[in-house]
Image 1 (cartoon, rainbow, N blue to C red):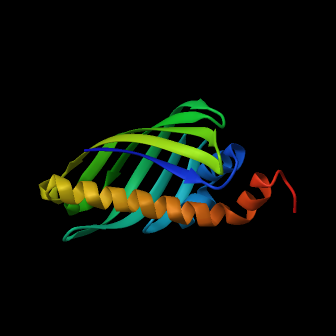
Image 2: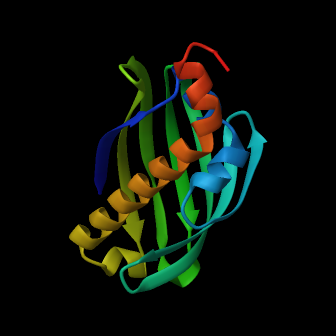
Length: 157
C-alpha cells in the first residue's frame, strides 16, 4: 500500500517540527492512541486502537527515525503488531517547507499489511489509511493552534 499527501498547517516550520517530535502532542493527535513513549531520540513506541473495515485491533508499534535534517525532513521505519488482526510495517518520508499561511507537510508512505488486515480489500485499507492521516493532521493542527497563531504573526501576542 502507498499513501502520499500534503497538508498545510497554520504554523511556522519550527513549531510544526517541534510538534512532530513532541510525544505529548502526537499522543493527542494520533487517532486511537492509547499510549506513546519516546525510548530514545530515534525510537518511539506506541499503542493504538484501530478499526479498519470489520477488523478492530490494538496495535503495539515501534517507530524509528533516520536521515533527520532538523526543521526540514526525516525518514521513518515503522512496525506494529495487532495480534490475530495482523501486522503492518513500512517506511515513510516527511518533508516540511515554508508556505503562504504556514508550513506544508509532504509525506510518502509505503506499507505492507498481513494477517486479517491483509485480507481486507486494498481500496478499504487505502481509504481507511487516508482517513486516519486526515484525522491526524486535523487534530495535530488543533494541538498546535495556540502556538501557531503566535508564530504566524511573527511572535506577537
